Image 1: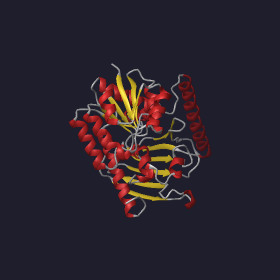
Image 2 (image 1 turned 60 degrees about the horizontal axis):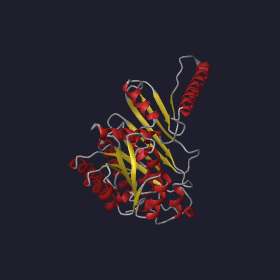
Image 3 (image 1 turned 45 degrees about the horizontal axis):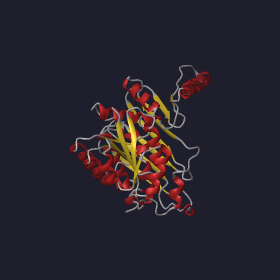
Image 4 (image 1 turned 120 degrees about the vertical axis):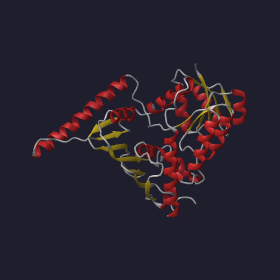
Amino acid sequence: MRLDVALVGCGKAADQHVSEIKKLKNAQVVSVCDLEPLMAEQLAIRYGVREYYSDFDRMLQQVKPDVVHITAPPQSHLSLAKKALDAGCHILVEKPLALNHEEGAYLIDHVARCNRKMTIGYTYYFDPIARAMRMMIQEGVLGEIVHVESFLGYDLSGRFGEPILADRMHWVRQLPGGLLQNILDHLLNKITEFIIEERPAVCAHAWQRGRDDANLGLPDELRVMVSGQTTSAYATFSSHARPLSHYLTIFGTKNTMHLDFITGTMTFSVSSTLPGSIGRLSGTFGQAWQYFREGGRNVIRFARSQYHYLEGLNFLLTSFYDSIIHDTLVPIPYTEMLRVSAMMDELFEQLRSAHLVIT
């Protein structure tokens, strides 16, 4: 069985989705849609999609897709998702799921009412090192998880950040949490996987470090402390730390693991039983050996065409489509999405109280 997939919202994220769907055997892109007809036409031409629309309702009626990817701005996620679900489609919604926890919970309830399936565009959730990490945790390699540190760097002068700086009416600036709300899922979903309480204690601090002439008008640095009953976490978002980093460190009672999502490597903290300076030297070589080993694995993956930026998204799409075809569990639990949205609500409430985000 091959699913017919349509996509609404033809911005930068749409290219990633369409390019990965084109690689799959269990789905095909049959139509794209955008309020700006030229955007839809250009995306369709780039990827050889036969149909394109500027009217979402018309596309649903005429194309009747099995799945709709919603890659439009978050302000429209709920309304577009409801229309797609009511038309009998399964949906993939780009992050953030909705504008707040209440909307997210409503959307998940509507998915159940319509007897459809939904997932969210957590690109790194199924990165190869993230999948390997979960297997090792299940095998008890780390013991009990004590603490987690999630770090995400962002380039405001890059291809995603530059349009936000240039346009004070950019849709990202109109989000209740501004720039942070459009990005934080990638930072927080690495925490909520380990802190399972629905409402853990959250303490957030944010500020704008950039110069006034950067014209951002929004926080570009964020620090978050999260405390569960048995596990704590620290999350850092930085637009200024260089080089750009994206990592997760997991501290366990048996071992500590470090995942680098930029290089695609997994390493462990090294301890030595040897005395004095010899022990310190052996630890250095032990760390070097791990990087040599990981580099070798990535060379092999590269040779097999498996070492690419969107491999996690590719795995997510394949798993989601398979869950539809075989009527199995969706790849990302809805409870995980709700924990992320609840944490973001609490975080933005604290920032609003400090007059750091839009009220």
